[in-house]
Length: 134
Image (cartoon, rainbow, N blue to C red; front, top):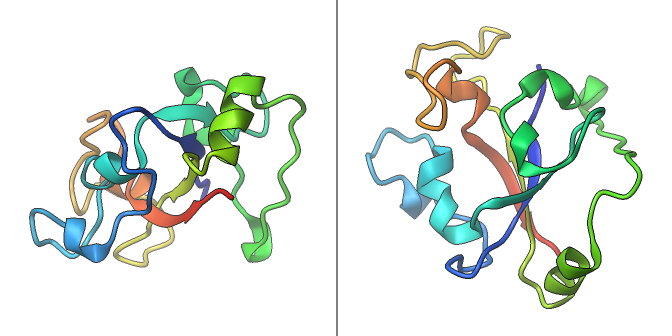
């Protein structure tokens, strides 16, 4: 299954990864909106084709499926000088989305729809992994 991967940061963000304590509704799943205050808005989408801006953030078919658990990402010119400066200032956070909560091999609507786009399953947009860029 594809994993949407983004670089996030913003003026209102804390520039950090969310902790399990951010699970505001107590469902033991960390949604993108629960994690958002920690890492901020999307500034780059690490797509395998097409553009890399936030406009493709939810186009799951444009992201790697990480075959064998490995993601080898290559896409020329993904970030501009401003983004590089913000990353150097430790304001960039990379977030991997997509969690198969019910382990059925697909992103399903079992836990509900994504709060980012109700046409997508929540499993496809929940936070799977996160790291602050240094």
